[in-house]
Amino acid sequence: MALPQLPQLVFHETGMNDSKIIVALDYSSAQQALEFAQKVSPEQCRLKIGKELFTSAGPALVESLAGQGYDIFLDLKFHDIPNTVMKAAAVAAKLGVWMLNVHAVGGSAMMQAAREGIEVVSRRPFLIAVTVLTSMSERDLQAIGIETPLPQLVSSLCASALESGLDGVVCSARETGLLREQISETALLVTPGIRPDWAANDDQKRIVTPRQAIIDGASYLVIGRPITQHSDPAEALQLISDTIRDLV
Ligand code: C5P
View 1 (spheres, helix red, strand yellow):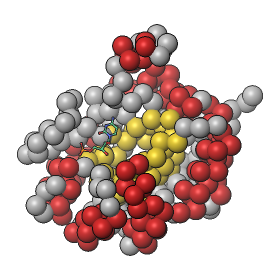
View 2 (cartoon, rainbow, N blue to C red; view 1 turned 90 degrees about the vertical axis):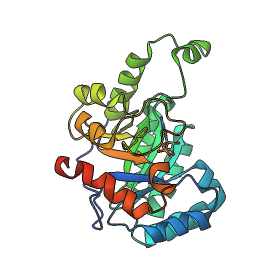
View 3 (cartoon, rainbow, N blue to C red; view 1 turned 45 degrees about the horizontal axis):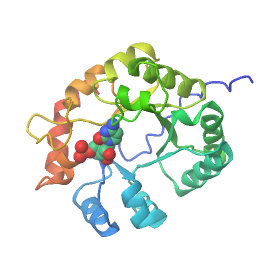
View 4 (tube, rainbow, N blue to C red; view 1 turned 180 degrees about the horizontal axis):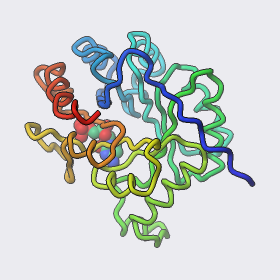
């Protein structure tokens, strides 16, 4: 089956900001997320809502934060049969999210279906793929019958995502440089595992500074605790933005 044409580059800079920083709202309740949103502004950052917060707070929170002007990355990593993913992606697009994601291991037909699903709105969200979860080691992969070396698997899943019409992939900070060499400069690399010099590592093991990640080719940085746990989140955002201002 012929692959669909690669997407036109669509600029979803939805007007309020061109920030490279996506704050991970790893909270368990809508109240915590809404309190955080009061402390910063849509000009300073975009917001990521993942499985815990979405399961707790649901679409109402997405609509509320989007209604305040925030660009929302809905990090639900869809992985199911193509028809189910297409419908879920369409609902997410109608919610007004700015970015959503799927698992590349769901296969090309599933990724193409997701791509079709988001066309339901006139200004579609970005659609990106998770390649291999960074929690998986080569040994873990072998245990489920995957013998391909990890870097090769990440590269081929990334290529498959782009061929399926997706806008880019989530990748660890340490993979960013290598992947950027393999893909076009317009493809998105969305990178967690970021720590400014002044922040604690928390449970992140292989970290990169915001500046280094942008130099390596990251399009957007996913940063959680250095901002959400800071006594002054707006100041933390400002400090981080200042370190990359001359690069973006
Ligand atoms: O607080 P911290 O900056 O470590 O948060 C990073 C965010 O990025 C969390 O939401 C985490 O689940 C997510 N993430 C990650 N590493 C990956 C993929 C996602 O840290 N490989």
